[in-house]
Amino acid sequence: MKKIKLFPSIISADFTNLSKQIKIVEKAGVDGLHLDVMDGNFVPNITFGPLIVSAIKSITSLTLDTHLMIKEPDRYIEAFVKAGSDIITVHVETCPHLHRTIQIIKSNGVKAGVTLNPATSASSLIEIIKYVDLILVMTVNPGFGGQNFIPEMIEKIKILSRLRDNINPSAVVQVDGGVSLKNAKVIVESGVDILVAGNSIFNQKNITLAIRKLKKLII
Image (cartoon, rainbow, N blue to C red; front, side):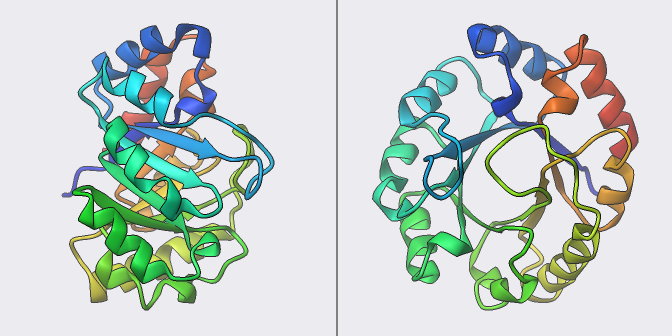
């Protein structure tokens, strides 16, 4: 049986205690950190840039999974690689020359991911799946944490998981948005390899216990 990985999303963390909270989730046995980079342009929010990624890299050995929710991501890939990103994921909606963008990421020596918004068809990734290391299915509209999971995305996850199995079995499928104790099991059963969770971890009174409960559901 494959191991399902858990990547807490730091967008939901307390940034006044970010170092402490990262140490807590690391000790609790998570597999990586999901870093949502937003530009206030492609999505209606602004978060952080390479400086914060670099600061996080200096305090943890966890995999840093950097999700670029920004326009013209090609301009910033090298900066995020230098900051310490291990995976860089871009949106199909922001990359008119997606093959080239994936090549840029890989030429910088890190893993390449591609993602799509809830309203974007799974078929938009058919031509690119063979080239990527990670396929991210957004199960909320990107921009803010704390949104409810869109149930219709389960079918999209299944479609992309099957495409992955047929075209590029070495790639992993990741889900981000509204992951909770209520839906984690059904999400995993749809073919997911990595769960991204924000509020259901960082907004709980006991972060360690929250992680333990989630991991129990997805083992």
